[in-house]
Image 1 (cartoon, rainbow, N blue to C red):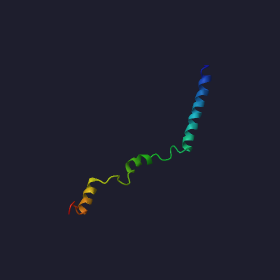
Image 2 (cartoon, rainbow, N blue to C red):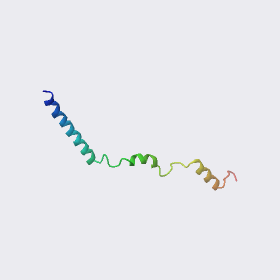
Image 3 (cartoon, rainbow, N blue to C red):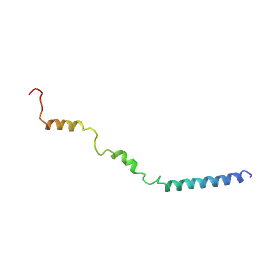
Image 4 (cartoon, rainbow, N blue to C red):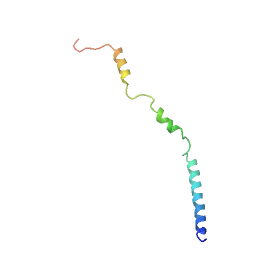
Length: 70
């Protein structure tokens, strides 16, 4: 019975701390956008950094060949 006098206030304090941490996280913006970072992995490359092999082949076909010594 004496343990309940200690455990009940400790449990109430832990619940109060958990509620305070939850409201702090909500106020600081931790839960604002849950879907954006997941979608940004799929759509973050707006421009390719290197031309692909198809683009390189097409650009070489469009330009006439330059020969050395002509």
